[in-house]
Length: 337
Image 1 (cartoon, rainbow, N blue to C red):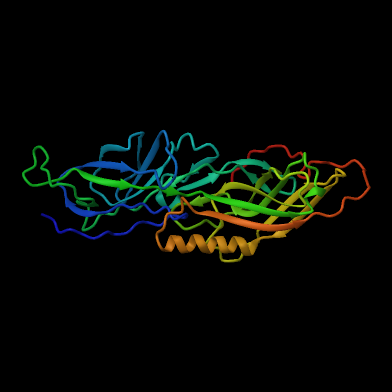
Image 2 (cartoon, rainbow, N blue to C red):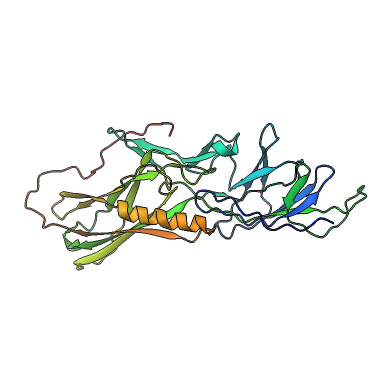
């Protein structure tokens, strides 16, 4: 009987997507049956179908395994594996997420699809849908040893020794963060109540390389829209919105600037537009993410928040016709992020 080994630890993918694969050693003669068990509760989703990617050190190409079962079984050849779990199929993507570099674990990237490109070159991306991944499954002592959870020592047909039906337990966490933007508005009665508050946040990433914490990806723009549900008589109010993002880069060599731009329509139909630097708040968010990754904490329940205060000016009597679309009428363009 093999000596029980301790937990080797999980691979910390970008957004603390730590899987909880508890592992032991097992000698095998041929390809073992491996039982896969999935717990999606940390990711707070219930996908209809998902894909497991197996990257073997000695394999010519990765192996993909698609399933819709919480418990499923497959055969794996002896090797040392890194694994990823994606809540969907790579060929179809996940709503606003696409994949590239999938032939290698170290080049596997998920990225948000493009919504439009502004005349100034800003890339506006769609919000990423929820994405998930798991831990490292690592063999030890050579090609015929797997590090998996030891079950019951039940012999397999035709084996003269005691072999087991191995189990890998996956508890995926989100790669995508939810960022909530809260705006406290003084003189909110000076805003045209029938108009939404629109905005953008600039500087976050549109993609993630799963083999590292965060990519040095070009900054992108996320569009924001707020509903004003404050009573008309209110002079001070609060509006909120939330969006999904791959988050702030954690390992940039130079500090990046993050800007929040908001546009309000005043009661005289004039646009009041502000831009404020929220770099300190985003850096604080990045510090939270990094700390949780270092501690192996799943981020599925972590809500990150940006807060600002705005004082609306007194509307002028100038009723000159103005463009009520402060962002322009940019045409959609397909680009490769």
